Amino acid sequence: MADHSLTMPDEAAMLALGRHLADVARIGDVIALEGGLGAGKTTLARGILEGLGLEGEAPSPSFAIVQPYDVPEVKLPVAHVDLYRLDDAEEAEELALDEYLMDSLLIVEWPDRLGPDAWPHALRLHIDIEPDGARRLTVRVPDAWTERWSQI
Picture 1 (tube, helix red, strand yellow):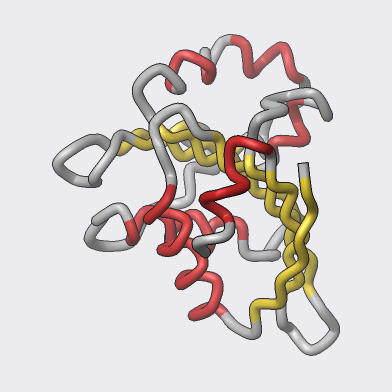
Picture 2 (tube, one colour):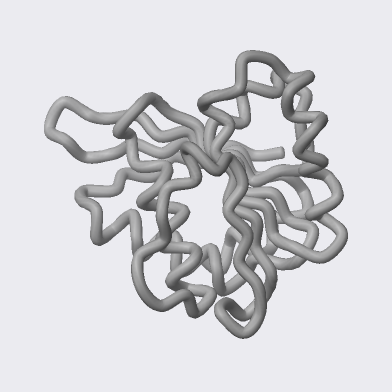
């Protein structure tokens, strides 16, 4: 697993990164988005969904917790998940998130709600807000993503 650092100067750059991720994402992948409130997790998820062909704005799944998208709305099935409202990892078991991995891409906001060992094979993007408003991304690239990450 390798770590990389990126700086995104604005929202357009975050959306573009999301579209690039969509180009290399596969069914069974987990893209974990970490960072505080307002860091840009949902913006990055929207970029991925745009890159997969979603037209219109993707709602934040804060209240639904899981927002599924399916073909032909997107090129491959996606479950966009927001775990912010979960109090503990046991609540997530009821969501059966791992079942989505059999036929979908999983985009997870607030994956830390499930503990540090959840989805060790996930591409993890931790987003911090810089003083100038830019976003600094620390990206943990697992082996399964090494070659694909080099294309981004």
